Length: 424
Image (cartoon, rainbow, N blue to C red):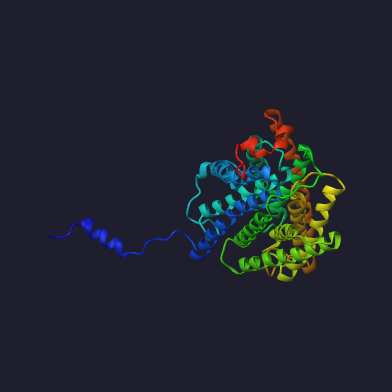
């Protein structure tokens, strides 16, 4: 019996090359998948970092504030956050084009070499950790239910719009020429300046100023290590390709954090007479923050200078905020993320090198970039603070934000979660 026409057609089709999805690059896609997983681990790292600094009675709630953001914002991002950030829209906000990830597929668009679905996932990790950063500013005094509502509103009203302004071609800050490689404006300045506003509006802990023993310095070191590891994906992954710019960002990420550590420890030694491990851990994070917006735009030499500046300035600001102005930013979120992010954003305008990527800064003949960076920083800082105050006021009308004095005294773990880290 002769084979049927359908059989012959199927055999012929099997011999033809299978059409590949447009322009997917295997190396780029693999690297960004790995980087996405590295950035994901930063949020549990942040949970350990913050929880190690608070008192034993508040460890569980501090861990929960970061960890549960992974689930809550992961869903919010997939449903509408990504669309508001990267949908078409206008110069100020996206639209509902990608609601429930509609149209987010596997075929790269434009000059991209990775699937849009992977880009969405990579950006999701940024969306998750950014609001979690804010929790360090009001640690040990906020109701968990209120935080969950603040978390969602802040992500939609602050994070998604600013992301759209900076990281979409039609965003109004992008059209101004602003440069933000991995999130100095989008992540750190939004979180840092929102943290300052939150610390002021929510108010001080009842025993602010009294000596408080951190729960576990080893946990702080573990959290720092996870953050440091993940930050290589955060910064180098933002090249969205396995290329030279990613390698430069990878190198700069380490050098800036190492420089910040050395400078911070020196400042602590000069001012307090004793360098501390906690200070060294905070310094690493400050250095990582400061290089984030500049990681793929500056040379290694400039990265070291940026890290040294962050180690000195962030340390000084942390002392001033609590000492001179008595603002209870519990875990120095503003000093590290707000000020560190600002240092990095402005540093792009000074040290930016087009030979590395982006545009030239002041030292390389670029006369206008610094002004653009400063303008964008001012806009993001003011917007973040104003919207955060509005969100807190709205949530305050719905439910109490602060725990009662008795709950604060007893500790939030028992009052808010019914469990304690020491099980006693």
